[in-house]
Length: 126
Length: 383
Image (cartoon, rainbow over all chains, first blue to last red; front, side, top):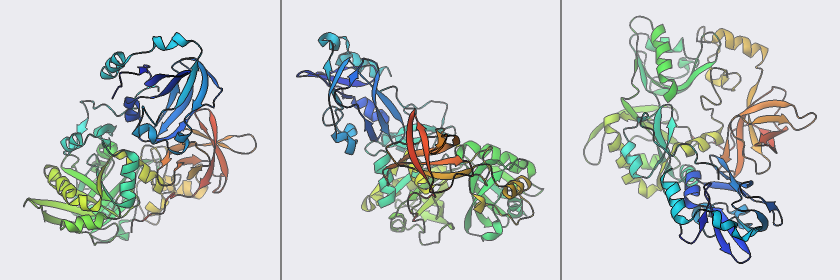
C-alpha cells in the first residue's frame, strides 16, 4: 500500500504536504517489517530537526528503529495519541498513525523526495 | 527508519519443517532458528495477538526445528542418568523431565533439553535445534556397549498446543489431555478423516500456560496440524510464531540456550540448579559445578523490570544506580512484556546485586532505570 499523493524517503518515511508544512509518518511497508509497535518516541513541538538526522524512535516487540527527518525545519506538532496507542502505526500508518508535522526550512525541499513510483521500485527491489 | 529487521527473507540453505507449506499459506514471516526457517509471526496475527491467544485461549506453534534423539538398549536410562544433570530417579516411566547436558570439564551448558522416560531401556530426548548434533555426538561417544544413541531430528515434527483452552481442544479431537504436568502418553490417534497417527502427547511447553507438546512422525504432521485448526476455531485458536514463544518464555523467566545458558554460563549462574541431581555420584560437569556451588557463582541470572519506557535487549550493559555507576552485568534476554506492558529482561549480574535493587541499563545511550526482581514476571499457570 503506497498512496500516490505522498512523497517518500529511502528510510521508509512518508511525507504529506499540508497547510504550513508537512506531516510525516512511516510507511505501511515499514510497519509491516517492524511488527507490533509498542513505543513511539517523538520530539516536542519547537524542536529543530535536520534532514537525514534521527528525530525519534519506533520500537516493536522485537526491534527498534530510528525515525529520520525527511526534511529540515521545526516541529509544529507531534501525534500525542501514539503515546498511549502506538498500535495505530500498525493499523493505520498513513492516517491515525501519523507521527509529526514539520514547518519547512526550505519549501522546495519536498521536491527532492521520492515519489510513489520511485518508492514502489525501491521496496520491490528490497 | 533504518532497515528491515532480519527474518523477512527465506534463505534457501535453511531446513524446512514438514509444515512449511502451511506456514507460507498463512502468510508467515520466517526467521532463522538453529539452521531452520521457522515462522516468527503470521499475517493477521503478530506477536501481541499471538501472545494473547496463548494467555487467554489457545495457540499452536510449530516447533519441529527442536531436536529429537533416542537412547535405547539395556541400561539406557542409567547411562542418561550418569551423564545429564537432572536425577532420572525423581521420575518414573511415562514422565518427562527438564535436564542439562553440561561439559564434563567446565560444567558449561552444551544444551538444555527435555527427556522422556519411556522405560529403563528407552529414553527420548528433545534438545535445541542448533545443539542436537553435538548432544548426540557426546552421548554416542560415551555410550556403553548395548546402548545406542540415534539422531532422529528429521523423523518427527513437534507441535506445541498452549493455553487455557488447550485441554478442551485436544479432548474435542479425542487426544489424551487429562494427564498430569510433565507426563506423556504414547497413543495411536485416528484423525477425523480416518488416518492413523502415532502421537506422543506430553503435558509440557515453554509458555507458562497449561499446554501440550505433540511429537508426531514428520509425514503425518499436516494431518495433526489441520485437525487442530479445524477443531480449534471453537476455542479461539491462533497459529503462533516463535516471536510470541520468546515473549511468553521471557515473561516466565525460562532461560533460552544461546542467550541465558551457554558453554560460558553454568547452571549455578543461570539458577537452574534445581535441574541438577546434586546427590548423584556421576554426571557431566559434576566436579566443576560442585566446586563453583561451594565457592559461590561469580554472577547470577536475575530478572529486570523497566521503571520507564526503556526496553532492555540482549547484550545491553547494566550499571549500578548508585555511586559510580559501575558495570554490574549484562542483559542476556530482554523484550517488551505484552502482558505487563513494560520492558523485562534476564541479566547476568554480580552477586552483590540483590532483588529489589535499582539498576540502570544503557538502552542505546539512554540511561533507563530498572528494578531487580525475581522471575516469573507473570504468574505461571502450567498446572
